Image 1 (cartoon, one colour):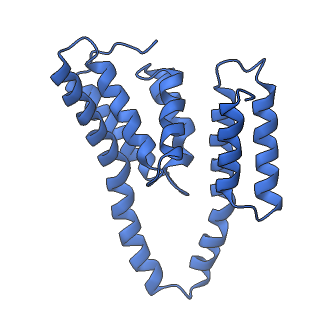
Image 2: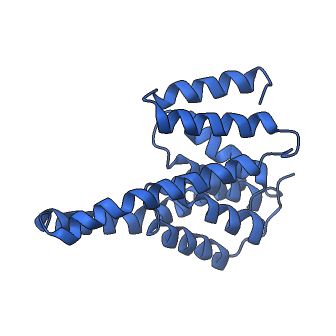
Length: 199
């Protein structure tokens, strides 16, 4: 069941601030901050249900276009939850406001930082510290992606009976790590197995 919210202007500002702070931590993309988004939006504030959270990520990953769309879907769902007992036009307006606030929060700080840092790093690309920083970021990105994958796996509805989901996650991880099979084949396989009801 989706939460019914009564959000004030301060709550919307709090949402913007949280996404803005996560924007600066989104090394490897916004998806790496999904565990903290879950902690904040689902566990701490209760602005999204577990199913809304995981559905936002799944839909954005399956849809063509940038993966950052999951943030827009979370903002949309927060807005819908806030306007769930209002007129239809107000529900739509709050949903659009949620999209705008979430996307500005996640995009603006990181875009400014990336533009500034990239210009500076390009001017100093031969320095040892710059090369070391680039090499050191790879394991951090991998660890953040693994944390996101783990969160999406364990937040499934029936963790005790969903052992095939765990097996699929483990096999997919090993295939990505050890082979050069394109990731879209694994996504397609997961969709087929899900469509057949096996996971």
